[in-house]
Amino acid sequence: MFSIGEHVIHPGQGVCTVTGFKDSPAPMLVLEAGTGHKKTQLLYPVAQSDRLHRAISREDALALIEHYEDLECDSFTERNANLEEAYFKQMLKHGAPDTVRVAKTMHARIRDAERRSKKPSSYYARVLKEARRRSLEELACALDCTEEHVAEMIEAQMN
Image 1 (cartoon, rainbow, N blue to C red):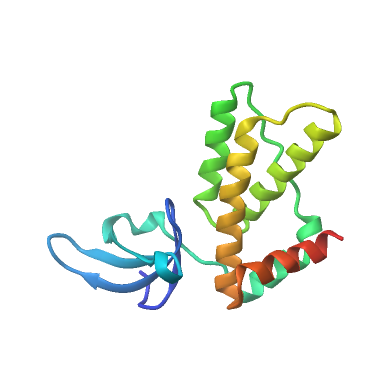
Image 2: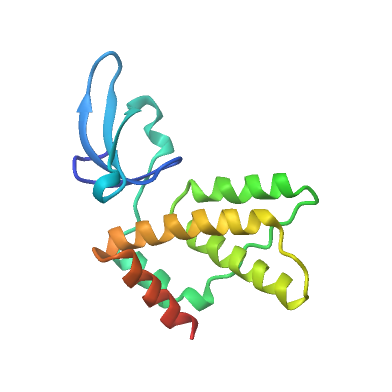
């Protein structure tokens, strides 16, 4: 079970903070998603809490960023782009390091298509945007810094 103040990865929302518990009509976790003026309170069934994941630790976040270049892209391919997109969107529900791997994979696929003077699949940009958002949000939470700072840290590893 999770504790009040703990950061968890909600499959649909990304990083959430456990802010409390409610018992009626069924046991629920009270979660807060988002930051700043976009904060949203969610009730999540305790019976389904196995679908939530703990957010990445500070040490693991630092190691992930430090070894970003060593992180392998996902080689999954499917003839049907919708099935391929569904696979990568499912990976985003797990949190880091999967979100970071998906973002790196989509970035590499876009770059590869452009190098070959081909138009990248439209789903690449959609998945990249969400993977990047979730990655930066979770890593910033783990490192207690801004998402912009995390992006700069990753960028520095790429150069």
